Amino acid sequence: MSRPTRITSVTVKDIRFPTSLQKDGSDAMHKAPDYSCPYVTIKTDTELEGNGTTFTVGRGNHIVCCAVEVFEKMLVGKQLSDIFYDFGNFWQSLVSEDQIRWLGPEKGVIHLATAAIVNALWDLWAKMENKPLWKLLVDMEPEKLVSTIDFRYMADTLTKEEALDILKKMQDGKKAREEELLAKGFPAYTTSCGWLGYSDEKIKKLATEAMAAGWTRFKMKVGADVKDDVRRAKIFRETLEEDMLLMVDANQKWEVQEAIDWMKQMADYKILWIEEPTNPDDVMGHAAIAEALVPLGIGVATGEMCQNRVMFKQFLKAKAMQYCQIDACRLGGVNEVLAVILLAAKYNVPVCPHAGGVALCELVQHLSMFDFVCVSGTMENRMIEFADHLHEHMLSPVVLKGGRYMAPKDPGYVVGIKEKALADFVYPEGAEWQRMFKEGLFQQE
Image (cartoon, rainbow, N blue to C red; front, side, top):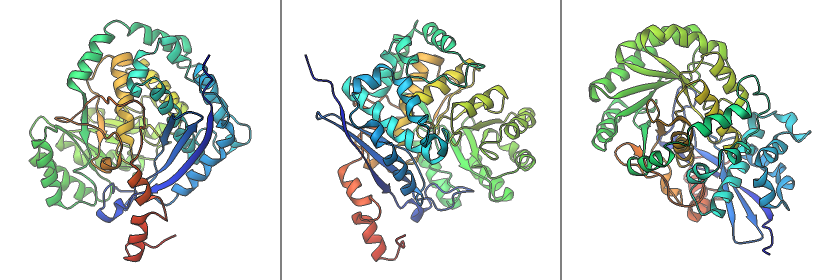
């Protein structure tokens, strides 16, 4: 009889990339972000190890790393078989520890840390089964998958029985959908052409190159100046072909009425959605904006900073989002993301994940692919964000063809960041950071 595999250590590294130098990732609220991640490694008493990340934009990454370390004693010594046998209850134990939960509960820095740890556990599970995460999820029996979800605070909206019914109804045709996914990939849109800090010439150049590579869906950042946003939208529309999609993202910049008035001035440019128009916790504000924009044919998208399944429940019930933007690292890892995907299915709201950052594209592709095969059964009105940054540092980078994510084949979820990148960009001692300090590009904190 084989010995059960146990967790022996949980470590975290403060990894930061200097994306602010080129204004990559710049928007109305984050003018000079340095894309960063707490990088978690869970080791076992075998050769098996799992990697997990969450995402920040630089200063503050260290705080999440400290939060990860708080959870170490809750993991070391645990058997993987015990965790995965009853993952829903284990997840609940992480977010409900009676002293740690006070720092959330289930939101903020402590929930970001939870995401990194839980993502590493799912990476372990997928590697144990020698499958990419999307395939691990697709192959699970509905009862097993539902057992990984914490249904607390959702009984008034989505019960365990309803979730099970959604999954069981979608068993028919699952094999054909998986074959379609493998053959065609999953639709994507690009944000890489429309960062707020980019010049007009750079926007035109990048959009033209993207179209030549097969992209048909684009997003631009807005919110600094309405006349400038209208002008930039005009550049996009004059550059893009007639039937191509254009979305805009304000990153929480506006007041409610300001958002409505601003978008009325942009309506001539056939905007599919306005993303995060106001404070990400303002359910009723988003609902008011959504209602006002219906006559213009503009939907509201939000969710990348929606902190837990309970917030998503409110947004969906209030009709405050027409596009559900799950984030693989803002929510508490895969378990909670599964809950939100099922909630969105009940309300017939398409899931269009937030991505970009560090490893977010690599992560969310698995979640959308599971959604298509097992939950929604359609790719219509669904797409995954893509930003062309930092993939060269990933052990298993995303593969895109003609503006579509191709299904990952490597076992795992996060899979990992290359050793050289970890050595070069660990903060502050990494070789690249030391070089930039010496050259005066950054000041060490």
